[in-house]
Amino acid sequence: MRVLVHGSELSAATAAAALAWVGHRVVWWPHPEHDWPTLIDSAWLTSEPQLMARLEEGETHGHLRILGVDEPVPTDADFEVLWLAVSPGQREDALETVSRLSAGLSGEAVLINNSTFPVGGTDELARRLGQGRRAVALADLLEAGRAWDAFTRPARWLLGCDDHDAERRVRELLRAFNRRREVFQCMPRRAAELTKLAINGMLATRISYMNEIAGLADTLGVDVEFVRQGMGADSRIGYEYLYPGCGFGGPNFSRDLMRLVDVQSASGRHSALLHQVLDINEQKKETLFRKLWAHYHGRLDGLVVAIWGAAFKPGTARIDHAPVLTLLRALWAQGVRVRLHDPAATGALRDHVGDHPLLELFSGDPEEVLDGADALMLVTEWKAYWNPDWPALARRLKGRLLLDGRNIYDPGHVADMGLYYRGIGRRADP
Image 1 (cartoon, rainbow, N blue to C red):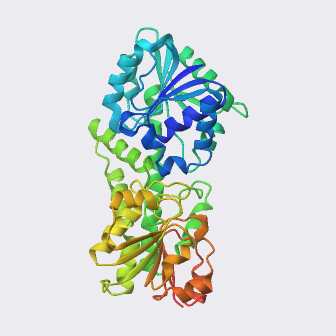
Image 2: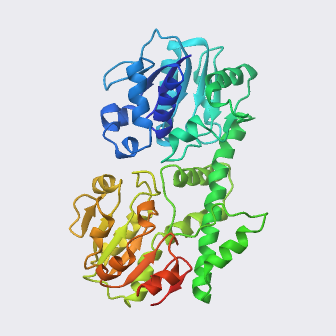
Image 3: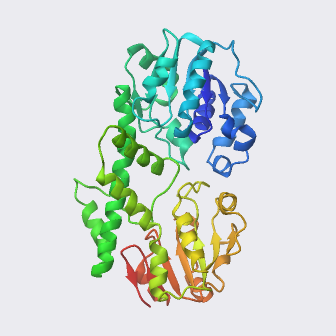
């Protein structure tokens, strides 16, 4: 099929690469705010497993064409599919773009809205299409760090569609990714849009609830790991997203939660629950700072803190809404020097904060940041951090304080190394 993909989101890049990989004729038009020369230098894109190689492969085989900065969209291509994957902030621009592009679409073309817009956003796009063309909502369920696998071996496609013929065309477009088992879950457009937001709202609520329990466990002197396992063993609850930590971030998770709050407000409803979830998450981003403050009784000026991890999650170079940003601001306000290691996200962090006098960045050996540090903070649970050389870590970490923001270490083992361990709802002394 002849496909035009528009947008500069991870979902746009993945769709362009995957659809070309299975033989569709794809033109990818990145959004002008983040054109191809910008994207090709973005660490979040180049570090995404397999994606750049598949994009290059598509271009080499002639199935994929990526439009340059001033290169116009072909008006005579008679595209059968317009795949729209732009950011929520580009919604108004997307409406104008669809109106403008409609002349270059075939008479029975399908618009696939893979963007996260407010409920009813796909209806607005449909109104911009000419007679005979249809629009569907396809929820963006990709995860940064495994986008290629999530697209090509999907657990499910959440499709919002009010037209049988449009559904048939979408199934044909994605047939290569639907062979193992039936992965389409179909519902009306507006229901699919709300479902996408509701999913992330529920996951965020579970995380924030578990963080609240971890705070209570800290106060009561209870190891929250026992509580987590007891809760997860209940079949009505399960273990997923029950891991307490120092806050969540990311370009989609936080944004979708805010979008759900906006949808509630626009409908005349106030969600005290969602506002509380957001508040808890922002507070948790400072939890390691508060533990450092308590350990050193507020005397932080001049301390050196080593940090492992800046990305909002392992496997990506993105720092959108990442807990480390809040943490750094709190540390610098107290005059704390930071030595930070991340295998992928140091470039993005430097772009965000600039050359700060209290920040040194490292991307080689994680243990480089430990020398002379008064504390080590684990913020992102990259696999390279899970099993350090404990005797060497204990020798190099002057302050003997390990603050585990993801509860990946065993408190007893850390204490046996002569270190003070402070996790989220867990603690142990040497």
